[in-house]
Length: 626
Image (tube, rainbow, N blue to C red; front, side, top):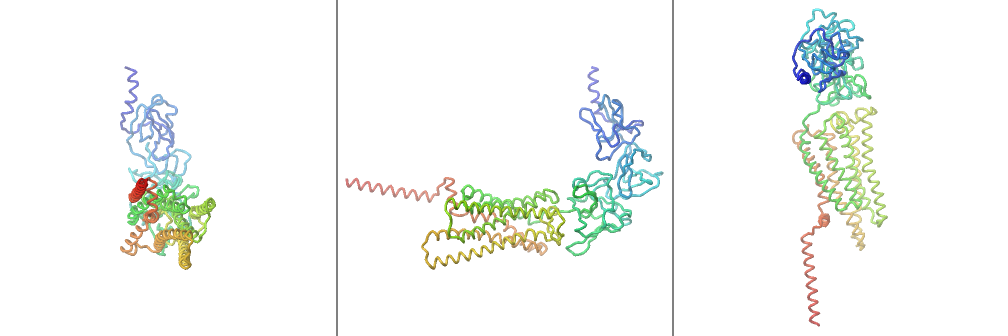
């Protein structure tokens, strides 16, 4: 029975947690900068406290290091008095008493110039008169400093303030939500909450030694003047990006206003530090490519997509379905044995991927992250691939139509293989080189802001910023050049077609082989022309939208843009109709599935019946003769 109680008693004690004030004379279980971590089997460990937001301040520390049994105070999930026996927790009591609001962690003092915490080289804080410490003001919107010579007669409020020592006295930091304080002193917007800074990108992590030092930029007027800090992290719903001082025109004025040049209005715009939503902020970054203090801009992206993206989603999905059917039918009918079939498969694959990635980018990716940048470059690459393979088809039909002779057998296959390799190098290689070029220019500062490509900050594509023409230079112009080449090839091929047709009619050429080849090429040309007209109209409209904002022209033009976009997004349907909805493809498909058409079956039945009748009649006549 005694053994039973000795086994079950510790678990009963652990499960019963009372509340009390911290008893006098007890030490801290772990060292300063550490907290107590509890395991399920009543064991424990002292681990480093990454946040340093809660601590116990008593003269004795590291109690459990040399005392396997006894009681001590520390922070775990809350403040507790722990009871130990044989290096195991046998009970704990939650501590209920007022905190002392210290601005910096234990062992640090406040630096009022840098608004940061400096190491003190000891843990003596004679002004603290409580055992439980709460560090910093992480939930505050605005924090203002008030330097003091002494903390005597200072009432320690429950919330909204913190106190600490400085190298020459003391400081009282006030937390407020009232923006009127910025009317009396300069306010500067900080990206992260109090005691935090950017680590590994735009992630706010506890780092008390950074603070806010305005003496890092010539863009700041009177950087040594006192200022209050406005914390902006909770008010930025998306992400931050660095404002390059070389690329943008801006200043932080001595009254706290942030002034920047806006290309759309060709004028300076001012914003206050208390502006809701997006805007500027200052923060310290430790990235390899960006170490130190920087101006950042909080990017605010509308959560609701424009109506045209919502509407065009369904035509894009429909196009993907028909493009997949086109690829499937061409593959099972072995149409890819011919060079033109291989070209069409590449074009359909590129167009399918283009629509698929556009759907994914519009509805599954948030701007500002790495995934968005990858999708943006993917759109640039695969869109250019689609245009390049259309160009390949136009070039191939012109080369084929312009030649009335051809090789036979293995020589023709070698010739087609050489052509295909060249087409592949152009159709996939050229877009890859263009995409890599855009990527290289986007991560360097070699170009001015007017043509430097930006991808993945405001949208998952080449961004159309006011005064920036990167989309026109690096995407629209190459596509326009491809369309001009296509139009030139079309005109040459059409003129050649008309000339050959007139010659055939004039001399009444009886060479059936030449005539047959001409008819085949003419049919292929007709198909390519229909497809090219569709692509040409699409690109022309896209080019117009690069210069004109149809949404700003009124409801009619906004709806007109949506209708035209829907028509353009049905390209997969047009391709299916042009290349698949043909009698020859239909018959080949039935033959592949071993299905005989009813009219063919009836014709074969009639032919068989007629042949049998003739044979029977002939045999009958022979019998009569005999």
